[in-house]
Length: 321
Ligand SMILES: Cc1cc2nc3c(=O)[nH]c(=O)nc-3n(C[C@H](O)[C@H](O)[C@H](O)COP(=O)(O)OP(=O)(O)OC[C@H]3O[C@@H](n4cnc5c(N)ncnc54)[C@H](O)[C@@H]3O)c2cc1C
Image (cartoon, rainbow, N blue to C red; front, side, top):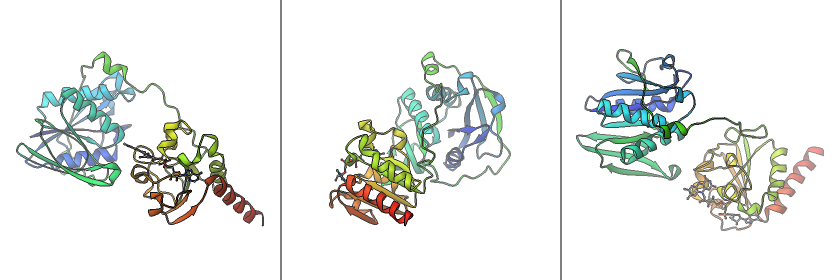
Protein backbone atom coordinates (compact mmCIF):
# COMPACT_ATOMS: atom_id res chain seq x y z
CA UNK A 1 0.00 0.00 0.00
CA UNK A 2 1.24 3.47 -0.88
CA UNK A 3 -0.12 6.56 0.87
CA UNK A 4 0.33 10.15 -0.26
CA UNK A 5 -0.05 12.95 2.28
CA UNK A 6 -0.55 16.57 1.32
CA UNK A 7 1.41 18.92 3.61
CA UNK A 8 0.72 22.61 4.13
CA UNK A 9 3.74 24.67 5.11
CA UNK A 10 4.65 28.20 5.99
CA UNK A 11 8.12 29.36 4.88
CA UNK A 12 9.50 25.83 4.81
CA UNK A 13 8.01 24.79 8.17
CA UNK A 14 5.30 22.14 7.92
CA UNK A 15 2.14 23.21 9.79
CA UNK A 16 1.12 21.22 12.86
CA UNK A 17 -2.16 19.79 11.41
CA UNK A 18 -0.16 18.54 8.40
CA UNK A 19 2.36 16.82 10.70
CA UNK A 20 -0.60 15.19 12.43
CA UNK A 21 -1.98 14.07 9.04
CA UNK A 22 1.43 12.61 8.15
CA UNK A 23 1.51 10.77 11.49
CA UNK A 24 -1.95 9.32 10.81
CA UNK A 25 -0.85 8.29 7.29
CA UNK A 26 2.26 6.58 8.65
CA UNK A 27 0.15 4.58 11.10
CA UNK A 28 -2.11 3.08 8.45
CA UNK A 29 -0.43 -0.29 8.87
CA UNK A 30 0.50 -3.01 6.46
CA UNK A 31 3.95 -1.44 6.06
CA UNK A 32 2.47 1.43 4.09
CA UNK A 33 5.00 3.44 2.11
CA UNK A 34 4.23 7.10 2.79
CA UNK A 35 5.09 9.89 0.38
CA UNK A 36 4.46 13.56 1.08
CA UNK A 37 3.71 16.34 -1.36
CA UNK A 38 4.21 20.05 -0.74
CA UNK A 39 3.45 22.82 -3.22
CA UNK A 40 5.94 25.68 -3.53
CA UNK A 41 6.97 28.31 -6.05
CA UNK A 42 10.63 27.48 -5.51
CA UNK A 43 12.48 24.22 -4.91
CA UNK A 44 14.27 25.95 -2.03
CA UNK A 45 11.06 25.62 -0.01
CA UNK A 46 11.42 21.90 0.61
CA UNK A 47 10.26 21.20 4.18
CA UNK A 48 13.00 21.02 6.76
CA UNK A 49 13.16 18.68 9.74
CA UNK A 50 12.29 15.10 10.45
CA UNK A 51 8.97 13.98 9.00
CA UNK A 52 7.20 10.64 9.53
CA UNK A 53 7.28 9.86 5.78
CA UNK A 54 9.58 7.93 3.44
CA UNK A 55 9.90 10.55 0.71
CA UNK A 56 8.95 14.16 0.02
CA UNK A 57 8.04 15.48 -3.41
CA UNK A 58 8.05 19.25 -3.88
CA UNK A 59 5.65 20.27 -6.64
CA UNK A 60 7.28 23.43 -7.98
CA UNK A 61 5.25 25.95 -9.98
CA UNK A 62 5.03 29.74 -9.98
CA UNK A 63 1.27 29.40 -9.33
CA UNK A 64 2.11 28.10 -5.86
CA UNK A 65 3.43 31.51 -4.79
CA UNK A 66 -0.11 32.09 -3.51
CA UNK A 67 -2.87 29.70 -2.47
CA UNK A 68 -4.23 27.96 -5.59
CA UNK A 69 -6.41 25.04 -4.39
CA UNK A 70 -7.37 23.48 -7.72
CA UNK A 71 -3.80 23.71 -9.02
CA UNK A 72 -2.51 22.00 -5.86
CA UNK A 73 -5.20 19.33 -6.27
CA UNK A 74 -4.09 18.69 -9.85
CA UNK A 75 -0.49 18.25 -8.65
CA UNK A 76 -1.69 15.83 -5.94
CA UNK A 77 -3.71 13.83 -8.48
CA UNK A 78 -0.75 13.70 -10.90
CA UNK A 79 1.64 12.43 -8.22
CA UNK A 80 -0.92 10.00 -6.73
CA UNK A 81 -1.35 8.48 -10.19
CA UNK A 82 2.39 8.20 -10.75
CA UNK A 83 2.91 6.55 -7.34
CA UNK A 84 -0.16 4.30 -7.64
CA UNK A 85 -1.28 5.66 -4.26
CA UNK A 86 -4.23 3.82 -2.73
CA UNK A 87 -4.70 6.42 -0.02
CA UNK A 88 -4.43 10.23 -0.13
CA UNK A 89 -4.44 12.09 3.18
CA UNK A 90 -4.58 15.79 4.00
CA UNK A 91 -4.93 17.99 7.08
CA UNK A 92 -8.52 18.74 8.13
CA UNK A 93 -7.93 22.49 7.95
CA UNK A 94 -10.10 24.76 5.80
CA UNK A 95 -7.49 24.68 3.05
CA UNK A 96 -6.66 21.00 3.46
CA UNK A 97 -10.33 20.11 3.17
CA UNK A 98 -10.68 22.36 0.13
CA UNK A 99 -7.69 20.84 -1.67
CA UNK A 100 -8.81 17.27 -0.91
CA UNK A 101 -12.37 18.12 -2.01
CA UNK A 102 -10.93 19.20 -5.39
CA UNK A 103 -8.90 15.96 -5.51
CA UNK A 104 -12.11 13.99 -4.86
CA UNK A 105 -13.94 15.87 -7.61
CA UNK A 106 -11.10 15.34 -10.10
CA UNK A 107 -10.98 11.60 -9.33
CA UNK A 108 -14.76 11.29 -8.96
CA UNK A 109 -14.28 9.59 -5.57
CA UNK A 110 -15.77 10.14 -2.11
CA UNK A 111 -13.85 12.12 0.53
CA UNK A 112 -14.01 11.28 4.23
CA UNK A 113 -13.31 14.66 5.87
CA UNK A 114 -12.22 15.33 9.46
CA UNK A 115 -11.33 11.76 10.45
CA UNK A 116 -10.19 10.99 13.99
CA UNK A 117 -9.46 7.30 13.38
CA UNK A 118 -8.80 5.16 10.32
CA UNK A 119 -8.46 1.38 9.97
CA UNK A 120 -7.41 -0.08 6.64
CA UNK A 121 -7.31 -3.85 6.08
CA UNK A 122 -6.98 -5.13 2.52
CA UNK A 123 -9.71 -3.40 0.51
CA UNK A 124 -11.73 -2.52 3.61
CA UNK A 125 -11.39 1.04 4.92
CA UNK A 126 -13.26 2.19 8.01
CA UNK A 127 -13.14 5.72 9.33
CA UNK A 128 -14.46 7.58 12.36
CA UNK A 129 -15.03 11.21 11.60
CA UNK A 130 -16.29 14.36 13.26
CA UNK A 131 -19.61 15.74 12.03
CA UNK A 132 -21.73 18.76 12.88
CA UNK A 133 -19.02 20.88 14.42
CA UNK A 134 -17.92 18.15 16.80
CA UNK A 135 -21.35 17.31 18.16
CA UNK A 136 -21.29 13.73 16.82
CA UNK A 137 -18.87 11.07 15.62
CA UNK A 138 -19.75 9.05 12.53
CA UNK A 139 -18.37 5.61 11.78
CA UNK A 140 -18.31 4.81 8.08
CA UNK A 141 -16.97 2.27 5.63
CA UNK A 142 -15.44 3.92 2.58
CA UNK A 143 -16.06 1.99 -0.61
CA UNK A 144 -13.56 3.39 -3.11
CA UNK A 145 -10.45 2.17 -4.99
CA UNK A 146 -8.47 5.09 -3.51
CA UNK A 147 -9.19 6.20 0.05
CA UNK A 148 -9.33 10.00 0.30
CA UNK A 149 -9.43 11.50 3.77
CA UNK A 150 -8.53 14.50 5.87
CA UNK A 151 -7.45 14.29 9.51
CA UNK A 152 -9.27 16.33 12.13
CA UNK A 153 -6.69 18.69 13.70
CA UNK A 154 -5.43 17.40 17.08
CA UNK A 155 -7.07 13.98 16.65
CA UNK A 156 -3.57 12.48 16.83
CA UNK A 157 -0.33 13.88 18.20
CA UNK A 158 2.31 14.71 15.61
CA UNK A 159 5.29 12.40 15.87
CA UNK A 160 8.62 12.92 14.11
CA UNK A 161 9.94 10.20 11.82
CA UNK A 162 11.93 7.48 13.55
CA UNK A 163 14.31 6.41 10.78
CA UNK A 164 16.43 8.15 8.19
CA UNK A 165 15.30 11.60 7.00
CA UNK A 166 13.04 11.30 3.96
CA UNK A 167 14.46 11.72 0.48
CA UNK A 168 13.47 15.00 -1.20
CA UNK A 169 12.74 15.36 -4.92
CA UNK A 170 11.11 18.07 -7.01
CA UNK A 171 8.80 17.89 -9.99
CA UNK A 172 6.93 20.35 -12.19
CA UNK A 173 3.24 19.46 -12.32
CA UNK A 174 1.15 19.85 -15.46
CA UNK A 175 -1.59 22.31 -14.56
CA UNK A 176 -4.71 23.25 -16.52
CA UNK A 177 -5.63 26.82 -17.44
CA UNK A 178 -8.76 26.54 -15.29
CA UNK A 179 -6.72 25.53 -12.25
CA UNK A 180 -4.42 28.53 -12.66
CA UNK A 181 -7.40 30.90 -12.70
CA UNK A 182 -8.39 29.97 -9.16
CA UNK A 183 -5.93 31.52 -6.72
CA UNK A 184 -5.57 34.15 -4.02
CA UNK A 185 -4.54 37.45 -5.60
CA UNK A 186 -4.83 39.80 -2.62
CA UNK A 187 -5.02 39.62 1.17
CA UNK A 188 -7.02 42.18 3.10
CA UNK A 189 -6.69 42.13 6.88
CA UNK A 190 -10.03 41.89 8.70
CA UNK A 191 -11.19 45.05 10.46
CA UNK A 192 -11.41 43.70 14.01
CA UNK A 193 -11.51 47.01 15.85
CA UNK A 194 -8.35 46.00 17.66
CA UNK A 195 -9.66 42.89 19.46
CA UNK A 196 -9.53 39.62 17.54
CA UNK A 197 -12.64 37.47 17.90
CA UNK A 198 -10.68 34.24 18.25
CA UNK A 199 -8.45 35.61 21.03
CA UNK A 200 -10.86 37.96 22.84
CA UNK A 201 -11.34 37.48 26.60
CA UNK A 202 -14.87 38.88 26.30
CA UNK A 203 -17.18 38.56 23.28
CA UNK A 204 -20.49 40.39 22.96
CA UNK A 205 -22.53 38.83 20.20
CA UNK A 206 -25.80 39.68 18.50
CA UNK A 207 -28.29 37.49 16.69
CA UNK A 208 -31.41 37.98 14.65
CA UNK A 209 -32.95 39.48 17.77
CA UNK A 210 -30.84 42.61 17.15
CA UNK A 211 -33.34 43.32 14.38
CA UNK A 212 -31.10 45.20 11.94
CA UNK A 213 -27.58 46.47 11.26
CA UNK A 214 -28.39 49.55 13.34
CA UNK A 215 -29.66 47.27 16.10
CA UNK A 216 -26.01 46.38 16.82
CA UNK A 217 -25.30 49.87 18.20
CA UNK A 218 -25.97 48.92 21.86
CA UNK A 219 -23.99 45.67 21.38
CA UNK A 220 -21.02 47.64 20.01
CA UNK A 221 -21.30 50.12 22.86
CA UNK A 222 -21.20 47.36 25.50
CA UNK A 223 -18.31 45.66 23.68
CA UNK A 224 -16.32 48.90 23.73
CA UNK A 225 -16.92 49.38 27.45
CA UNK A 226 -15.72 45.82 28.14
CA UNK A 227 -12.86 45.96 25.60
CA UNK A 228 -14.58 43.01 23.98
CA UNK A 229 -14.85 41.73 20.42
CA UNK A 230 -18.21 41.86 18.63
CA UNK A 231 -19.54 38.56 17.31
CA UNK A 232 -22.76 37.49 15.66
CA UNK A 233 -24.80 34.52 14.46
CA UNK A 234 -25.12 33.32 10.90
CA UNK A 235 -28.64 34.75 10.66
CA UNK A 236 -26.93 38.11 10.98
CA UNK A 237 -24.22 37.55 8.37
CA UNK A 238 -26.83 36.08 6.00
CA UNK A 239 -28.87 39.27 6.43
CA UNK A 240 -25.76 41.33 5.62
CA UNK A 241 -25.84 43.17 8.96
CA UNK A 242 -22.27 42.13 9.88
CA UNK A 243 -19.30 40.67 7.91
CA UNK A 244 -18.61 36.94 7.94
CA UNK A 245 -15.43 37.58 9.96
CA UNK A 246 -17.72 38.34 12.94
CA UNK A 247 -19.61 35.04 12.72
CA UNK A 248 -19.31 32.62 15.63
CA UNK A 249 -20.05 28.97 14.98
CA UNK A 250 -19.46 25.83 13.03
CA UNK A 251 -18.93 27.78 9.82
CA UNK A 252 -17.52 30.84 11.58
CA UNK A 253 -14.91 31.49 14.23
CA UNK A 254 -14.45 29.17 17.23
CA UNK A 255 -14.05 31.27 20.37
CA UNK A 256 -13.00 30.56 23.96
CA UNK A 257 -13.50 33.80 25.95
CA UNK A 258 -13.82 34.16 29.71
CA UNK A 259 -17.40 35.25 29.09
CA UNK A 260 -19.64 35.15 26.04
CA UNK A 261 -22.57 37.58 26.08
CA UNK A 262 -25.11 36.32 23.54
CA UNK A 263 -27.84 38.85 22.77
CA UNK A 264 -30.88 37.76 20.77
CA UNK A 265 -29.30 34.45 19.74
CA UNK A 266 -31.43 31.29 19.94
CA UNK A 267 -28.53 28.85 20.46
CA UNK A 268 -28.71 26.60 17.38
CA UNK A 269 -26.31 23.61 17.45
CA UNK A 270 -24.20 25.18 14.71
CA UNK A 271 -23.82 28.38 16.70
CA UNK A 272 -23.01 26.60 19.95
CA UNK A 273 -20.29 24.60 18.13
CA UNK A 274 -18.37 27.87 17.93
CA UNK A 275 -18.80 29.09 21.52
CA UNK A 276 -18.73 25.91 23.58
CA UNK A 277 -15.15 26.82 24.59
CA UNK A 278 -16.47 29.89 26.46
CA UNK A 279 -15.91 29.63 30.23
CA UNK A 280 -19.21 31.43 30.99
CA UNK A 281 -22.22 32.33 28.86
CA UNK A 282 -24.63 35.17 29.59
CA UNK A 283 -27.74 34.91 27.41
CA UNK A 284 -29.97 37.92 26.88
CA UNK A 285 -33.13 36.72 25.20
CA UNK A 286 -36.79 37.66 25.00
CA UNK A 287 -37.80 33.99 25.09
CA UNK A 288 -37.24 32.05 28.29
CA UNK A 289 -37.61 28.80 26.28
CA UNK A 290 -34.73 29.68 23.88
CA UNK A 291 -32.34 26.68 23.58
CA UNK A 292 -29.31 28.80 24.50
CA UNK A 293 -30.61 28.97 28.07
CA UNK A 294 -29.70 25.29 28.48
CA UNK A 295 -26.02 26.18 27.98
CA UNK A 296 -26.06 29.57 29.71
CA UNK A 297 -24.57 30.19 33.15
CA UNK A 298 -26.52 33.47 33.49
CA UNK A 299 -29.59 34.75 31.68
CA UNK A 300 -31.60 37.93 31.44
CA UNK A 301 -35.05 37.46 29.94
CA UNK A 302 -36.05 40.62 28.14
CA UNK A 303 -35.69 42.85 25.12
CA UNK A 304 -31.98 43.28 24.33
CA UNK A 305 -32.65 46.85 23.21
CA UNK A 306 -33.55 47.63 26.83
CA UNK A 307 -31.32 45.16 28.68
CA UNK A 308 -28.00 45.86 26.89
CA UNK A 309 -28.14 49.69 27.28
CA UNK A 310 -29.11 49.18 30.93
CA UNK A 311 -25.99 47.02 31.48
CA UNK A 312 -23.82 49.67 29.79
CA UNK A 313 -25.39 52.40 31.92
CA UNK A 314 -24.78 50.36 35.09
CA UNK A 315 -21.11 49.80 34.13
CA UNK A 316 -20.64 53.53 33.51
CA UNK A 317 -22.34 54.40 36.79
CA UNK A 318 -20.19 51.91 38.70
CA UNK A 319 -17.01 53.26 37.11
CA UNK A 320 -17.83 56.91 37.75
CA UNK A 321 -19.00 56.23 41.30
C1 LIG B 1 -24.49 23.84 7.72
C2 LIG B 1 -24.90 24.95 8.63
C3 LIG B 1 -23.91 25.70 9.24
C4 LIG B 1 -24.27 26.74 10.09
N1 LIG B 1 -23.29 27.46 10.69
C5 LIG B 1 -23.63 28.41 11.59
C6 LIG B 1 -22.63 29.16 12.29
O1 LIG B 1 -21.43 28.99 12.09
N2 LIG B 1 -23.04 30.10 13.19
C7 LIG B 1 -24.36 30.34 13.45
O2 LIG B 1 -24.67 31.23 14.28
N3 LIG B 1 -25.32 29.67 12.79
C8 LIG B 1 -25.00 28.72 11.87
N4 LIG B 1 -25.97 28.08 11.19
C9 LIG B 1 -27.37 28.57 11.32
C10 LIG B 1 -28.07 28.10 12.58
O3 LIG B 1 -28.69 26.84 12.33
C11 LIG B 1 -29.16 29.11 12.99
O4 LIG B 1 -30.07 29.30 11.92
C12 LIG B 1 -28.62 30.47 13.41
O5 LIG B 1 -27.59 30.31 14.37
C13 LIG B 1 -29.76 31.29 14.01
O6 LIG B 1 -29.29 32.56 14.31
P1 LIG B 1 -29.99 33.42 15.48
O7 LIG B 1 -29.89 32.68 16.77
O8 LIG B 1 -29.42 34.78 15.42
O9 LIG B 1 -31.49 33.54 14.96
P2 LIG B 1 -32.82 32.86 15.49
O10 LIG B 1 -32.70 31.41 15.59
O11 LIG B 1 -33.92 33.44 14.67
O12 LIG B 1 -32.97 33.40 16.99
C14 LIG B 1 -33.21 34.73 17.32
C15 LIG B 1 -33.32 34.79 18.84
O13 LIG B 1 -33.47 36.14 19.22
C16 LIG B 1 -34.44 36.22 20.23
N5 LIG B 1 -34.97 37.59 20.17
C17 LIG B 1 -35.76 38.13 19.20
N6 LIG B 1 -35.96 39.43 19.45
C18 LIG B 1 -35.31 39.71 20.60
C19 LIG B 1 -35.13 40.90 21.36
N7 LIG B 1 -35.66 42.08 20.98
N8 LIG B 1 -34.39 40.83 22.49
C20 LIG B 1 -33.83 39.66 22.90
N9 LIG B 1 -33.97 38.52 22.22
C21 LIG B 1 -34.68 38.56 21.07
C22 LIG B 1 -35.44 35.13 19.93
O14 LIG B 1 -36.14 34.73 21.09
C23 LIG B 1 -34.52 34.04 19.41
O15 LIG B 1 -34.09 33.19 20.48
C24 LIG B 1 -25.65 27.03 10.34
C25 LIG B 1 -26.62 26.26 9.73
C26 LIG B 1 -26.26 25.23 8.88
C27 LIG B 1 -27.33 24.40 8.25
